[in-house]
Image (cartoon, rainbow, N blue to C red; front, side, top):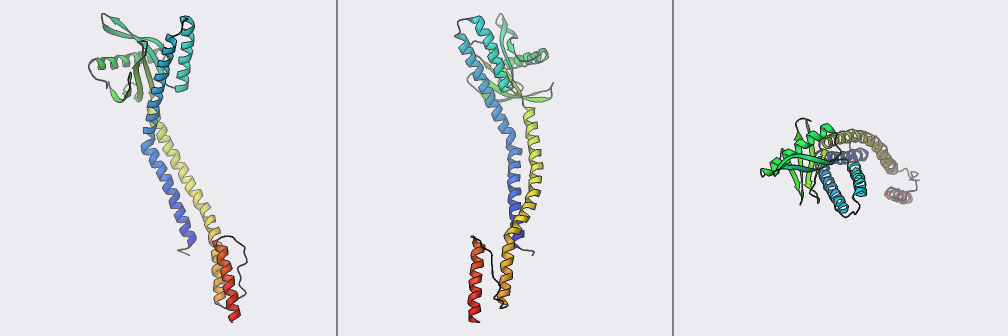
Length: 263
């Protein structure tokens, strides 16, 4: 039947399933990258707080040599847990003029250190000129740190970076890949699209059989009603169900018995 309940049920459930999948895809497409960025910013704030707290605790240590080894191990643990590039540095000053950042601790290799040093000088020079948006977008400003989103022309990639002053007058520079967040969002959307298509096709097949199980007893009741209309009072609904269809079947049996007695 063209307008059967089964077809309507299949179409309704399919439309509902597609609507849910499209909503999920839309949220991923337009909000997932922003969510990743928010989490990364929160991660950088957490790393800054951890390193700052490590320096505060280290300042209370009486034995400096033992503290130095434990401090380096603690920093390595922070880097492993967070997955960010971390550099701690001070400045070499000559007659009040900043010359170069002097790395105290870094996870970067020699080549990365040079690029990090150049980037730090860019940020400091920009700050000295009264700007805190050096070649990037200032995302968040804390009490003693700044977080930027910047584009590295040499690497042709976007990064999130954080620079801030620690309690011992050293500085902390954090960097994490922003491009990977965009790529993750794209891959996630593609995955959602493929999985959504498979789920929709499987759902249509499943709903066909579910719809059939719903409409089959209704068609049986329709056939019984036609036989009763033809004065065939031997037509009975013999299934025992505790739902609405069972109640309708019992009512038709009672109707059939009453009509049979009158005739």
